[in-house]
Amino acid sequence: MHHLANLALAFTLAAALAPAGEPTPGIKLFQENSFAEAERTLRAELEKDSGNAAVAAHHALALLRLGKNDEARAASARAVEAAPEEAITQLAAAEIAAETGRPDDAIRALEAATKADADHPRLPYAQGLVKVIRKDFPGAARDLERACELEPRNAYAHYYAGLAYNQVKRPDRMLSHFETFLRLAPSAPEAARVRSVMRTVK
Image 1: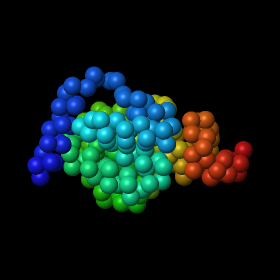
Image 2: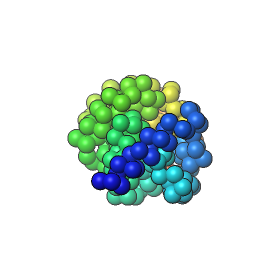
Image 3: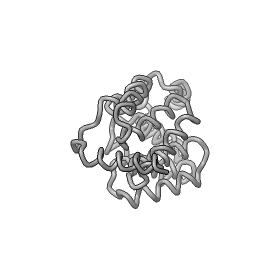
């Protein structure tokens, strides 16, 4: 408990001291969809500064993107436990839960994130993911469209937007988002499936 208290204090201090709006090199790599390099860099950043909630959250998300689901869940749980009031840790938890088949956990984390910061730019992406797993595809398409506007380089916002538009029979929007996804993350594990789906439409 003493260790957790110290870790939570470290997160709070780091948030207070970090320059606003300046992502770390590891977060920038994540935002550029360079997930393997981002994971290594974020891990090194955490070793130097374990109190950075954004770094911890993005490290968990980078692990998810590399298919290391168990490690991603564990890293996310540590981040949330240390900084439960930070929207980014709850958003990461929501995204990881949604993508690993735990819808109830995703909804709880999303509610906590919304309470922490209802204007967080990554919130529409998490909302869209939750709607995808609940099969509310029209709602997911709206949220994910907004997510793409707020974070145009978020490859997976475009990926899930394409999936949602496929379900609502909007092949024009599906193709547009899938093309952007392939441009941003051409080597992603989902790329082959996306190209296959696109060939059936063109």
